[in-house]
Length: 432
Image 1: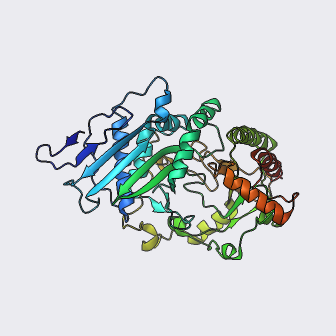
Image 2 (image 1 turned 30 degrees about the vertical axis):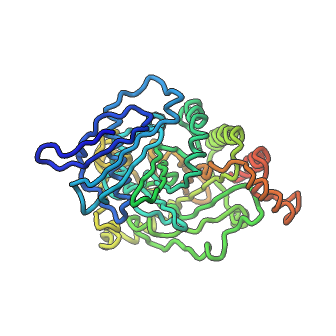
Image 3 (image 1 turned 90 degrees about the vertical axis):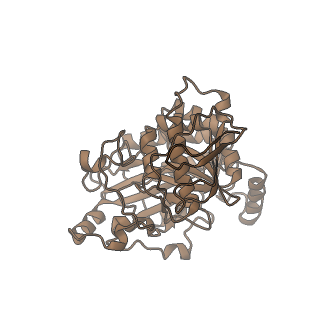
């Protein structure tokens, strides 16, 4: 067990490296950023840990190829009685990163540089997402390009069980996928409580407001938004700074059908999309995964333009312009790849975008509507909830629903092959 105490006149934390670390652990690098101020100690430790882990990885050469051990590896840091930043960090905490070399490789394949990833997660505290339900954390990075989701220890085990195949799939498709882009997985321990977090790319845009949202499974049984869900209405003229705090209703398959909703894209875009979807779904079937959904977000360009005109040059009110912790949101300046502003930081100064425009390098799940569509729209489409395997619990749920709704009913809990076929058939018909 190694420990590092004070060096010189500057106070630094006592860091104890766990003896069972399976990856090579380099010497601790003093944090360049000492303020990890968030309203929650778990978030502060998460920011500290990500900052430390990326600094640490920068000292380790990128391996020529990943080895089987890399898919089981982890690094652990234990901090006791540190003497710096006491007002922002708890006195004792632990931080664990799972499979650091694997996730570094995945970030590279998804076109995300470690420096940008680090800045997006640590420059300012993440903001609680309006999608958060129940007690679990669901956060957006301050620049809205990443999602930090609290998961269970069972989810961590499931992630480990598919990580090697997931990585192979991403290599095979050259990072072009509708699956979640998993970028890092961590455990934060504060006061003996363990919080497991996974970081993914945000499927929605960091700058285009989503006005309507659907969760589609291809099942029509019990697949309608509840009355409680429907009363969530996106207010008119909402300033984008406040958008993270606005709850948007999630509509489902029956709502999509009843609303006569359609996705208006070109034949070529549809073919490309379905080709990606088919490959991803084949991968999920192979792993006996089911119960996933297509998340569809729709940005109404005309509505956004009207709201922008109505707002004019009015500055956002003070409440909107400040994050919950009192830190002003960062301006988006810099250049992508070497940006001090994170993943989306280069866009405003180097590539100004007009209404409904997006950069496909950042908004990888976005597709614009075809010219001549009834409305100018931008669609964000990706697969979510991909860690549910067809286990004993699902088999029991399938049996119970079959008894209730009949063998021919389109229930969501069916065998992975059946689920995949029905899902693909339904999704292929959402296009105009």
